[in-house]
Length: 329
Ligand code: SF4
Image (cartoon, rainbow, N blue to C red; front, top):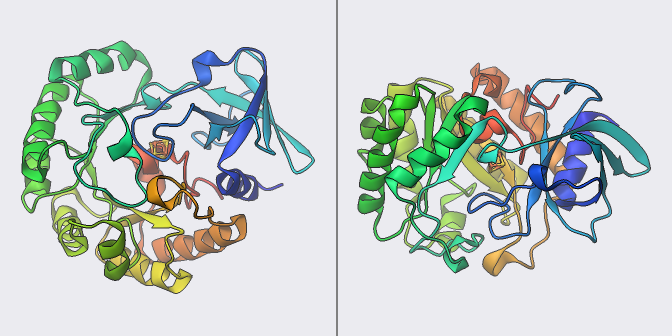
């Protein structure tokens, strides 16, 4: 099976059954992203000895009932058993949250209640600046980037100020820093002034109407404006935005948004819905839909001259949760 199809099947299923040798060092538990609050997840890279394409990977939750199996053969070597096929590869250890990055959630708590997000219900807390510096120090020998995200602990403005403090303390590592937060109008300029190289402001839904329904109290237009103003500062292809697939939008809605974002130099990251919170009963998007959208996204990105393979930080550099044009085909 082609890698993109295999990855689409894993994303459609959302999980794998883990067996074989002990795998604790390869299992990560997250306070953000699609696996927040779940028993754990792993990263699988295809390719027997070394990954066949550097950085090609898929992340999957661990679930004893999954129809897909990963057998750990020892020392990271693993087989993915899927639809009657066996794919040789490796388990990749996460540094902090994902491979090769210290991706840190500053505040694992949130005052907003986006309908798909489990974070407000988790027993999260805000990390201290010194604690975050120590976390990055502990993995500094095995990362290429530092990425920062956060919920909103008390207010959007207060969260931005705290994240700026965190970023200022992390500059001494000399690594590219990417930041993904809910932005205030001045956030792009403030992050740029601190030397941040990439930003990701998640527009989340394909249409503003869907956003009002899914993210009460937040502004689709505000995020859209912050994305545009960021391109002037960080450059085309250094600004990203996650858009969830599976909230009730059509493929035409997603294509329209992707044209709109790429037209201003923003790279959309298409994120399959992980059913959670008040959308726990929704289905995951099918592999067929993800593959069709992947082709559309690839065409739109190529026409705009944007290439996610240049990403230095955050999800477009990781690619574990999404089919990523250029990396996955
Ligand atoms: S793609 Fe993004 S959310 Fe998924 S594991 Fe990688 S960094 Fe985390």
